[in-house]
Image 1 (cartoon, rainbow, N blue to C red):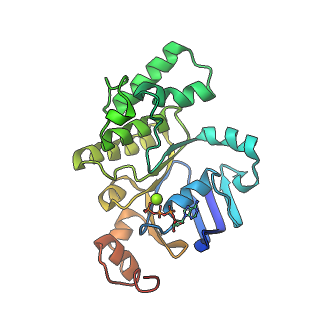
Image 2 (image 1 turned 90 degrees about the vertical axis):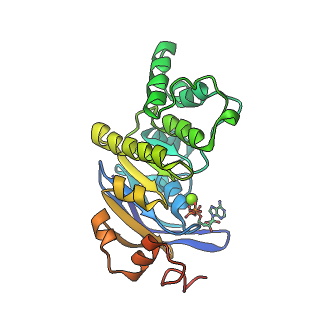
Length: 250
Ligand SMILES: Nc1ncnc2c1ncn2[C@@H]1O[C@H](COP(=O)(O)OP(=O)(O)OP(=O)(O)O)[C@@H](O)[C@H]1O
Ligand SMILES: [Mg+2]
């Protein structure tokens, strides 16, 4: 469903992706882990075509994303739900309108259909009854859940989650994990998750890949990763300051 082939990207003079290869099957939940600033969000941006590779290919559902023009990209993106790391809610719109926005922009649904769909997604993320609240009145965790409701409101084939549980209390985080799992199982969506939260990664992923120095240096099932003897994987999952991930660049 999603393939990155030898993707290179330099940003602000820094080589962020260096020959990145990634292959994600239809219906799979793949989680990218890695240190802050290593290129996880940049990877997601390549998948939706917000960023284009300097070199290499990005193929989604048979489409060569790097070759799409503006108009083609717009149509292509309807396939995706994207939970931005920053939530990216519109401050001038209430919760209902934030979640309804993609429906108003990309569908011809009636007002009743929109109403029904938005309320359904808000209750799925545990936010029923917050329709009239403004983003500035929400806690960080609530903002994240509104953004999640918006990401899934079009019932997309592919959902990209950038740090879906960061900043949430453990109980809400677990509910979000359950939701991600549930959407994969019930709706057969393909998901790419970026996270530092290893508990969440183990729970939701079919496979986990460790991004370092511009490419995925190890990948496997949650059990493979937990039991890995690779010193780089061990350093990351155990959260140790000193080790192979921190000697070459820091
Ligand atoms: N538009 C941009 N212009 C210049 N540099 C950028 C741009 N976007 C990202 N970068 C740089 O690319 C690198 C990777 O950024 P990215 O946002 O992918 O990190 P990340 O792995 O998602 O980190 P975090 O876990 O902190 O979110 C960083 O050094 C960042 O400063
Ligand atoms: Mg990021």
